[in-house]
Image: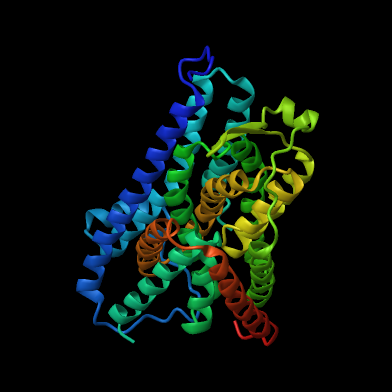
Length: 132
Length: 277
């Protein structure tokens, strides 16, 4: 039943690996959010709910990776949750990187280019100063 | 209300969202956004941030299973992600200039459309003649069934690509996965068999949502206290849903849920028109 593939790996192996990777990413992010969430509830659970009715945006600490890492070192529960969120967002983006590597190994030039285009669009939105 | 009480209610709501989402194919945002805005009067922008988080969680969580079964067409997904990510970033950018009430009305309209899409007849057959573009882009594929491997070909690559761009814009603007539009592009325009369309759409939702989530995170739309119960609840719900799916027939559930969603959607549109957001 082996497919006639001259490449080092075939689509099936890649699919299994990407599947495992996606699961790992969600589980890790969920775990980190859970730890941060428990800490947050222990220290803030009995306070009144903050006002979400008007939008004021999160403070700088939660909105950038350096800010979140800085907050982590001070053991802030909200920053730990936000790290979980970042891992969650990073999972599909890293999945694209994995696909890129697999298309390279398969020597599928067209799909290397297509994957690079997708990756560039996301990286542009990350670093391109699109912070309106 | 205490933070603890609120978090537990949100956790239960997110669990329900993940459960129904995995049973009916509708994304978590469909439940999360109305719950936060209509029940808790939370600002639409925080709701969008939470909904994007739930879309990524559902997509990555369930895609991991489908991809391993070999039904998802990774090449189709990657090619169409060019369209959805451009759309998503554009949508997230124009969201700043879009009045919140208009976002609510658009969201309501999208909900009604999504509800109708889950009830419509599906395109099940594999096409045997595809377009030259599908051939050139290596989009034609195959998937395993009980009766052996089925090979299928694609048509109307351009049409599918355009609908995907629109799906991306809506996803970025409204914070939803816009799975219904993605399936429309693949199932109706490109004539991909239904099982492949839904799983590939699910696979793509994570990347589309991540593209706009980056913009929203930097803008402060994602509140950790809202995101935490959403991630955990949605994942737990989706997990239960995939277990339940083996034992129940989702047809009746889809009908009930579609009616419920339409009612919620009408309320969103009404409130939007009354400038209540």
